[in-house]
Image 1 (spheres, rainbow, N blue to C red):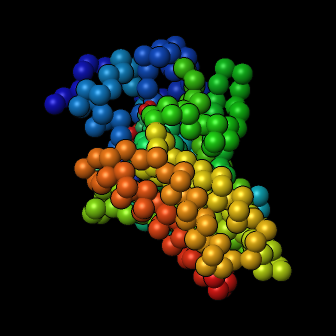
Image 2 (cartoon, rainbow, N blue to C red):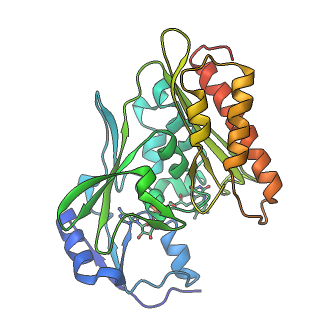
Length: 292
Ligand SMILES: Cc1cc2nc3c(=O)[nH]c(=O)nc-3n(C[C@H](O)[C@H](O)[C@H](O)COP(=O)(O)OP(=O)(O)OC[C@H]3O[C@@H](n4cnc5c(N)ncnc54)[C@H](O)[C@@H]3O)c2cc1C
């Protein structure tokens, strides 16, 4: 099918994009990589009257790492993250893992991390990663820019805290310390498919061999990605071991509330959620040289 008729507006600056969005309100949608929006328009699942193309906003193509954070702009592509020079650093292993399994290499040339967060697909990869890594999205609104913590940003399936006439400018990941590693575990039917289930895990250790803090999140386990708070709480302050990993895995099983579909039954997906969290924890700990 071809999309319903729409007006196409190419913005050349963030100010201009914002002005277009303010002018057209609920009628307008931002066009980033187009990897979700264009297919949705072709199937007429989305019928925006106005598209505001932000692909010429070169100021928002940045990927910056400094002492405090990693900041990714609204048109930085998945492929740019995958190939970034800093990505091999153990501290970014969660993002590194995910950057290689989001969709397929062709989609990653155009798809953006920020677009994926804004799309908030229940089976999206970056949303679970952002939860586990405690990221925040920079949203431009009428009263200026504000940072929205990812837990508040992800409201419901395909719904975020970005209001009418607003846009996301970028996402910020806090800099993990050098006793931190992560893992992204995705079960997919074939390369390029959305997750049947996926788990994002990030672990920070204390010098005494106990876990200082953990981020644990699931994709394809509810209306949108979910944080497994119970697992995070029980891991913090504990010495890693198989019993602890089993308890975190059980917490993931309880937290997972998937829908049955062509990819699998509810029971299968819940089982996978538990297994993938256990695998993710073991891999993150192994990357830190910790025997679980
Ligand atoms: C074949 C195929 C396989 C895929 N497999 C996967 C997969 O396995 N895992 C996965 O996570 N994703 C997958 N995707 C989706 C892909 O990752 C998309 O690129 C991503 O979901 C959206 O990013 P985008 O930049 O293309 O956004 P777009 O498609 O341009 O936009 C998506 C939505 O977000 C909004 N939006 C985008 N940017 C902004 C912004 N800056 N501010 C406000 N709103 C904004 C748009 O208005 C739109 O509603 C797949 C896509 C395809 C085509």
